[in-house]
Image (tube, one colour):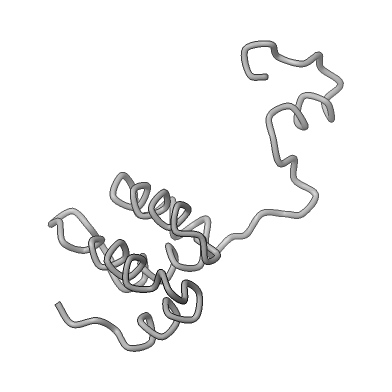
Length: 102
């Protein structure tokens, strides 16, 4: 499989010494018949990873489950005023903390 030069350069810039490992994770997406839009999804995964190899692996796995999630997350960033955690959401709604989600 031919590696997109732009993707390779962006991966090198984001991951430095871990670029080879990151590129292997990215290129694994697109190997399965159900993997859709591989170039677009790889760019989205790279964007979401923000230079963190564990995040890259996480989002690559999510893309294998449903690539549309990864595309949406990359292209529709969160509103900065949006609650970042379940606990923060409960607090904003004036609800008591949920002991099952501490």
